[in-house]
Length: 543
Image (cartoon, rainbow, N blue to C red):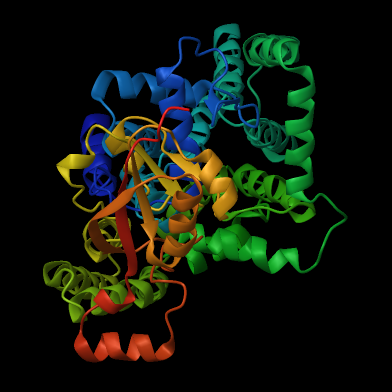
């Protein structure tokens, strides 16, 4: 138990120090949704004269609301086109979310704010998702701010508090509409099993919450419908189809549970125990302030049993899990603390020590390997003494080293040196975003050409063009150039790693077990790289 709580500024700086490492690098954690959607949408919006409706590949981006894209486009104008200017907001929002979580937990459970804060920033969910320019963390931060204001109204009343709560929830919905689901389940949970509502929080004030929510959230959608009625209906139909709504599937339960446990790692076992303990009412009839958090987690999870989902969709209830975990740990006796801290150390050690061994063996970063092992050993020693906060700090430090030094040192998504002769040309790739941050390096969206020769020939830009292609695409590319009567010359070759769906699937797709054995024998990853060529294509002749 922490005797003296540090101030909010100190916690903010601690959170930034833990979560920000490597977000400015090309090789930082990424995924196709980040570089294929977020980067491109932000760049196109920044280049547009009308920001009202962001665009992606020249088409109105109606699958998601615009608020976060507006922020990212503004950031590009303020700080230039680079990974840091887009990813920094996810880190800031994650730290602010952890601060709000600590405030709520301290107020309602009496648990140390610092302990709640450190446990949350030291989870795999926050360590990974905060480092990417995605919608989930910013939405969750605004959602949690809305819930904090609603809780303030619940305990103290006041129309201003509930109006602010409605506005903040509306802003969260303007980043991602699923905020409405989590906000609704939080309110329902409070009414069902929450602490006693203040007499000043009258039900007659609830319509003010709804009016504020609708007044802020609805106008943009009305405008989008007026501009593109058919396209908006089509996009929403596609979104519904992609979610694959259906009756409950029993097989979805392990997936949902796995998502929870993965996000809250290394506190997965402790979080499960906390939910089981706090869901019960106290036998002596006293109020159980944690019970509404458990109910919120459960009610928020139920809809995901009826649809296709991804782990990151559960990020909004990660703060509740952190509060429950910290409160449960804080209430254990010494033997219980040692046992749970030992489980957390073991769970975190499995992936972290494997990554340390990998980057150490291949010489990617021996320093990172040593730091990971040292932090894990220190966590193990502290766990044996039952020191909760110190163990939580070690967990956060390990994940910071893994995400900020070890994984980036592998070089996934690294930008090659592009010859200066290409500087005044248009850039294009074939079939995919081969280099995730190339769009940011060029300051505009990079055209992706079709993979078949005939379509590629007709889509090839007429001006001087730099084509960055994998070597297995070269036959189709050369055929397309011949069909379009274009001359080209190779100006550079390089090997690269590109993550496929998950960050750890980075070698070339046709790599075999023998290739891996060779790599381990030679202690070199070079043979697993995707061979690529940079072609400089001369301008086409005017007809």
